[in-house]
Length: 74
Image 1 (cartoon, rainbow, N blue to C red):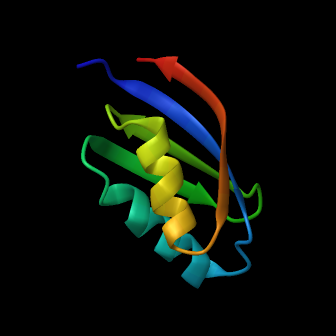
Image 2 (cartoon, helix red, strand yellow):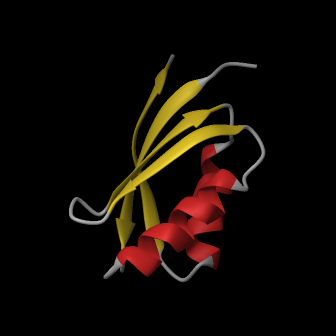
């Protein structure tokens, strides 16, 4: 299975609790090897073989809006 670096735009994060919630949700998605969340930039960077739609849904289930920015093969 191919591995990707996926950049997501995240809307609605206001504090470090939000960052932890989004990061935890992304890390629980099967295929995710690494997830980093940037509060100031309102973005998340994910590495692994996870499906983009599953990543977006995981963030949205935490109460935030998410959209795909870029995805590149590693």
